[in-house]
Image (cartoon, rainbow, N blue to C red; front, side, top):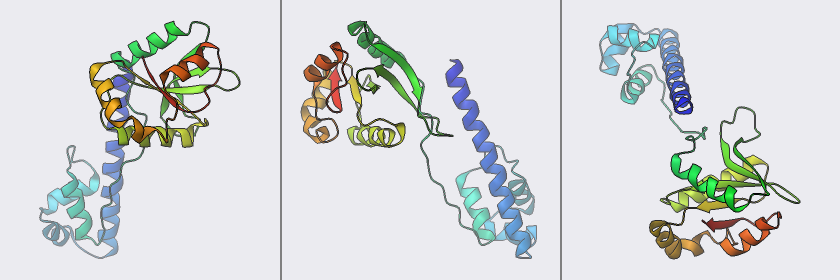
Length: 216
């Protein structure tokens, strides 16, 4: 619960910072253009009082529409994008799944929620296995959904995370089996190795030959 609260606090702090920064940019552009609050507010479809509060960043639940209109009224264009963040904390299903892997490999060192080694990057591997000759990260999925999004997320973490292969650990459920049966070959390029071969290497304490999917 503490981890979840920290994530929400970080998101709220980012919201306040964005609100203040965009408000300041709107104010600076309006003053540079010599426009009054009333004139710019009229162009934005809001009162001069509302625009003043927008510029001050004090509208607590400001909408994207309000910010976009405020920007447009002073010759700016609001651009919004999402960037990789820390991701959610491990949930009960993921923890149980990693626990099963730990019990299966009692001799292998297993660390959970290992940070990506990039300054300012808040993402973390769900787990990392200590193997010979190289450690291997693990991403745990209790319930499969969007496989394309999952594949992209894993590829980005591999690119930034300092590893050249990973294990996608999937709960052995009817839903997950059905999805993998239908789409396993679509993931073959990213995860060429299957459960039996990956586990054979892991039980020997060895690094798998390539990225693989383990259904457990």
